[in-house]
Image (tube, rainbow, N blue to C red; front, side, top):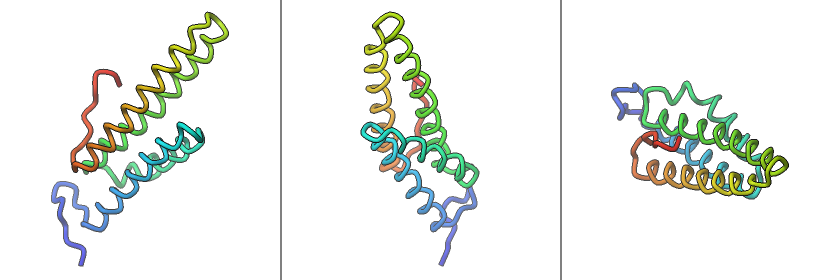
Length: 124
């Protein structure tokens, strides 16, 4: 039986469970990207495909968080690589971007397991 448990979104419990699973998978793909970079791109594609389904649920904030994590992480990584060749300071930028991305994946994952939305932080 598909009972509605999130009256604000109109989603059934099965739909919400599916969104939670997708959100967990994307966090896992983002975590795996520290070893295999392409998994973050796979997670981004999933986020964009399922974004409309997450609208109006607590998972919407996680999808937005994950998408911003990808794009800001990519931007800072590109800047870091450019600075390696330009000034040699790129390794510092890359390290900070790496730590920031880990923070975002861990914070998002923890908020998801608590059943809470992710609130934007001052650092992205």
